Length: 255
Image (tube, rainbow, N blue to C red; front, side, top):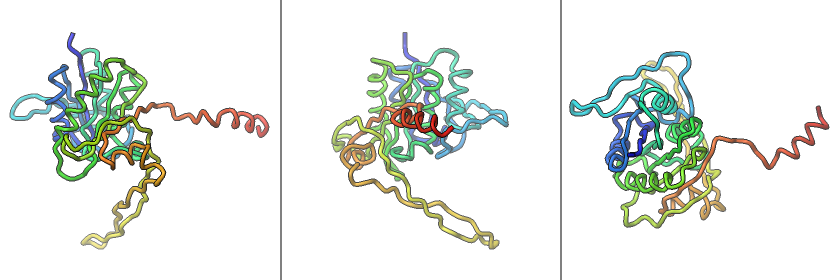
């Protein structure tokens, strides 16, 4: 029986990255697109609870190609799996995102959060991003997503999010594929203070991501910068297991 994939993103249903994914993955599976009607970058794992979700059939060239949802990427996966897919989903693929998702950025990422939502529903998932905000050929990342989908389904792990990042290079210039841990790289935030034509003050978030030098050879952020495709297995359990025993002793004495 042919596999069934749900495709989503946080760049919006008309983004080029999800088109590239559909072109590649539909060769191996029935692909259902459920994506935000507008860009939802950096919304994290937000879900909509205080207003209804509007769902419309999106068309290109007069032809139906997916469902546009008035919500977040996590909303899209939840309603896609529970209502719109019309049957079981074997894999959720989120992307191809326009910009890398490494280090602490995965907390903010709508792309990664969509894949994480799939895992909470018991469906294996893949988030894939290309590490640039410039114009890019998404086909390289999409072709790797096809290979990665086959790899995941060889031994499905419904509790694991596979977070993949692809350097913005021609396919023959990519240095290799590596499994890497998540970096601690984070953006050092700055705000530019500006004034609009009516003298109202507003702020624009800027800043740069700082990568610790000791992480250059072993983390997603460092190895991606060296031209490698990185694969980082992630899960939803945020417990610091290394602290449990000590904290239990301290809590028993304190409380």
